[in-house]
Each structure stands twice: as C-alpha cells, then as structure tokens.
Length: 463
Image (cartoon, rainbow, N blue to C red; front, side, top):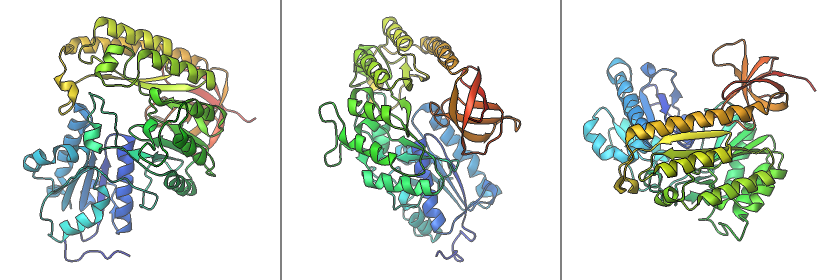
C-alpha cells in the first residue's frame, strides 16, 4: 500500500499520461501506468489537474519528432497554468536526443529512455524528494517487461497488444530502430502465455502480436531460429497461445518474408484462432533497392512467399509497407515496385515517402531522389493501391463474416462499427453496421451489402 507524499511536490499523486507513436510504445506506456497505479497514482482525464505529466514519445520519422516536441511544449504550459510539478519525457525521443533536449527544453524535469521505463516509480520518488542528481536516465536498452510487471491495458477491453520481443538485429539502412530500441531480446513462450491468460481473464478476446521483427522471435533463446524449412520457436509460441481460453483472434504483425516457413503457414491454415491475416513488411520489389536497404529478401523471393502463403492459406489477407524514393531508386525500380504491387494485390498497403534519418546508413547513400519525384511516385502508388483495395473488398459483398463490434460509429450513434478478422486495429478499414444491435466486444455475423474505398457496410443477421 502506497503512502501519499506530504513533504514532497506530489500531494495528490495525480497523473496525466500521453502515449505517442506505435503500438509497441503503447505497451511500454501501459506497463509504466501499471507501476504508477500500484504506487497510488491516479489518472487524471485532463492535464490541468495533474501533478505529474508524462509523454511517451516517438522519433521514428520527422513527423513523429515534431508531434513529440509539440505535445511536450503544449503540456508544459500546465506547469504555470495548472498543478503540474513534474514534466517527464520518456520513450524514443528521450532515448535519442536527451543530451540536446536537456539544454533546449528546460521545461522537462526528467528524461527516461526506452530501456528504463520500468524505473518510473523510484525515479519519480527521487524527483519528488529532490534527490535526483541528473535529468536523463538513458542507457543502452536491455530491458523488456514480463508477465510479472503490472500493466494497465488502456486499449478497448476486448483487445490487447502482446509484445513478444523488443529490439531488432536486422540493421536496415533506413531504420533507426536498433539505435532506439537496442538488440533483439525475446520473451519466453511461458512468459507470453502467462500474460495472454492474464489478459483473457480481463475480458480480452483479440490478441495482436507485435515486435520489431516477428520472424526473428526466439533466435536469442535456446533452440530458437529456423531449422531447414521450419521455425520451431514461432510454431511453439503460436500453438501455445492458441490454447489460451477466452481468446478468439490471434493476429501476427511484422513477419518478414525471408523467414516465413512452411510449418508456420500450415499452422495458420488449420488454426481456428490465428486470423487469416499477416502483416509482412517488404519495403520494395526491385532487387537493387532491396540490396541498398540491406534487406535479406529479393523481389522473386517475396513473390514466391506470397504465392506459397496463398496456396497454404486460401483467402489470407496481407498487409505490407513500402518506401518510395529511396536513394538510387530509378524509374525502372519504381516500375518494378508498381508491377510488384499489382501482382501481389495486398489488401492493405502503407506507403512511406523516404526522407533522410540522421544516424542511419542511408543518409550517406548517393543519388537522392528529388522531393517532387517522391511525391509523384507516392501519389501514383497510393491511387493504384486504392483501386486494388476496392476491388478486393468487392469480393466480400453478399458474404456473411464474423465481425468484432467496437461500439458506436465514431461519427454517429446511429451506426455501429467493428472489424472483421482481416482488419487490424487502428491501421485498416472498418465494418460499418447499419442494421442490428450488439455490444462492444461481441463477435457477430454480418452480411456485407456495400463497399466504400476501405470500409465495408453490412447488417447483423441471426443464423
């Protein structure tokens, strides 16, 4: 039982927390909130009423950096206009720029790196008691939480993100993640199953498995890694998670094509819980660009893995991400990318414009592509994918599918919205329900009657 401070700054132990960036960052935030909750901190719905304000930041791309800085500066006003006694920056921005930001942003009282977020309670206590000898607590990231860490699931109660590993060993030339998050460190299967059971006990029905690189999961553990055309550790993880009672959907993200093995495909095909959905980052189809990116795959390998996936798992929904305008990308390279996307026919595609990211090897590459050319290529690929997605969605019309209801539509209470198994939270389209009633968290049968660009429209039916 925690004792509310009477001598320090935090009289009420009130807290306002903002989490920016990806779902992996969100899990870190939820673990921090779990520790703070156990220590007696109470979450405030508004920053005006909070003695402690924490911003868990992202710095993956330039836009994310700007959002992180703007958010911190906006919240800094509550040191004068509210109750704020401590403004904390945690996460990737703190990990990457704490040295510069200490002098440039004196409003921030403490910086916590990506490997120290579990220390939030003792660090705040030291700050409260005036015992901090420095502002920044940033080391080489080595920590990853386990099932024994408290975690406050702030996602809708029916779903959760399950982080299976942290860090990355790939060292793609455009990516700063290994610097921000450290080398790969995997959680054990037992640890992940235990957390999955905890989440299921809280009412979670949908588990979304995340990491920086799902396909490398377990290579740092005993007996981890690929063996011939199988991946025993990933197979074991998915098989054990399947057994967790109460979980209906298990979705896999960031499974790179070069390490996708036959046994895992077969498991996905026969499973009743692992969704027929796979997030498989490819970044490009042109071999020259892939080589400059330091990717392990070739365009031919990517196409062959997609073909094998569709053989093993008919109807599988594929999501991927690509980069346009990578240094040295020629017109022919871009045409290879266009033709690859046409052939692969992904249901979901994220298109990113290349920009130099300081600290990455790609900054030093020559033959930079002009910004106007990058923009034109982005628009061309975006329009192509929009057409493909609409065509693929048309195949749902007249079909009855399972839909996980999320609640009232974000624009009107007269409609419901949800997702089918081929739609991931936050990043994919929705199923808009215009006839029938259901509660958030229910899985119902929906007949699809109409297609929008990325969304489906349908009615609940009783079978």
